[in-house]
Image (cartoon, rainbow, N blue to C red; front, side, top):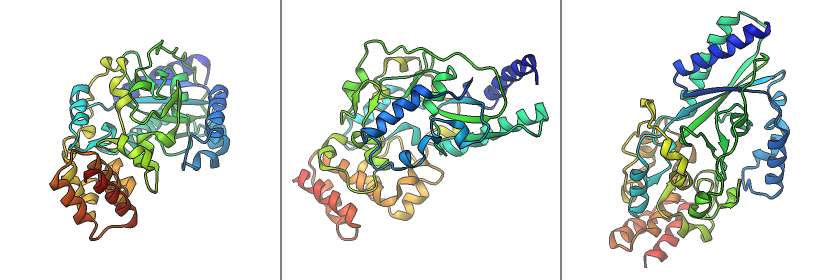
Length: 352
């Protein structure tokens, strides 16, 4: 394909992407030299915690052609997911008996939804070019991909001091996905940073996990502690977690750029099973069968029932002292795993 036809194709790809429900599409090359240096320094400090796969993948994360041979370009896409105003989220966080779940996980698992849309985009591209020697592969948090660095280079936004991607017109409430391709498409201009002197995200972090601008120590992060961490949550962080039982949104809620964020039109991201308004005592009472039923098709399922109870036990320990809370915690001791038991006993000491 000549330069003009590749330019026309790039324009068409962005049009198709928006038709498929992506709010933005950008294209970048695969030079991630700066991002690779940042990643290596981050790993050297041990900030990845138990996420050992970050090391195991080696340079595949920062060198796309090592993951998918022949990759020359990356098509990066953005899909907005915010379903409620920041004030509503704050209300839940400030209600200590409420079960706060990170807003990205309230609806359908975005991995499946976005991967299906990206595959449709790939099919459209293949149909348009009719070239058998062009390879394309879609990714949505499914492989070692530096998605935020790629999206930044593709012009979708800049990586903020909290390490999330921020868009001037859309804030940061969005998911990212990628298509690796051997097509030598024209690339878009990278976005410049606009955080300025703002440090709101650093100040608001419940566990002070943003140890420096653009550096997050995952071992301190509530999202890591409640989702990635397999074992016991370190005692030093339990009181700081508050009522957050799956992930954390504080740094996004406080970000001034999110005043430009728009509510999603994607119905699949709307809250299921009233997950945006649940109470701690109610979700703690779910049996494993209920947990599996109520989290079907949700990203929450990945932590499993035991970590779900672990997280809620911590949140109940942080709730106002109550005879009801003590009773439900004590009742759980009759039949629970050692992991859950440790956190229930801690919660009971807080309730005493």
